[in-house]
Length: 213
Ligand code: SF4
Image 1 (cartoon, rainbow, N blue to C red):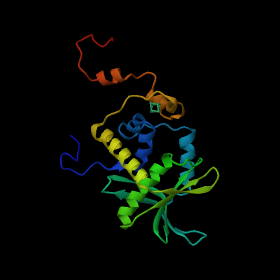
Image 2: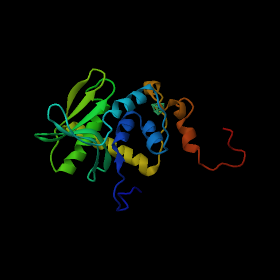
Image 3: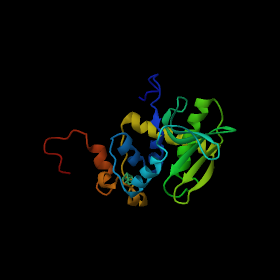
Image 4: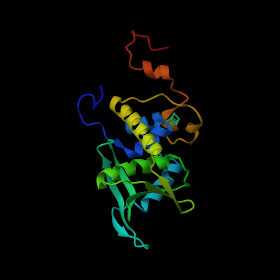
């Protein structure tokens, strides 16, 4: 039985987990349920890109744009929390700006992240957020992301799936496909060495001497 069914507040899901969940539920569970993490060149690039915007505080940029850096955000309605790299206060209200070290891929994981951040800002500022921005470090380009119903539903789907993993402490089996090639968790995940059957039977008591199969 999950927390909501017991009449408790639903588990708040870290926004950073949604991207992992959508990429591979096992990756998300290894990081956010088991606390396992490995760096690779992509994660280090990401850390460096975030370093410039991770200093908490309020600023006014060259365009006279007011902005918060490293702003903690949450939504009780959606049960999520996280940190926005930058939140610009434009004439229409808050606009989350996510910094990525590589290129921006429309419809990719960055959309999921800014979508979740937009939901938080809507609740915190009692407003509607229709647009977010992704800043791609590779070409130093800003791309608008429309926070439409489709993206909102995608975010909600990822939240529900990720919360189920956290509440049940479930670590799904490996996907063992092209995603594993670029995954920093591969050395610890061992996708080729784990079978769903073995995982499912790991804690089932067996008679003495019955662990050879
Ligand atoms: S190695 Fe493959 S199965 Fe394992 S966490 Fe990464 S993507 Fe998922």
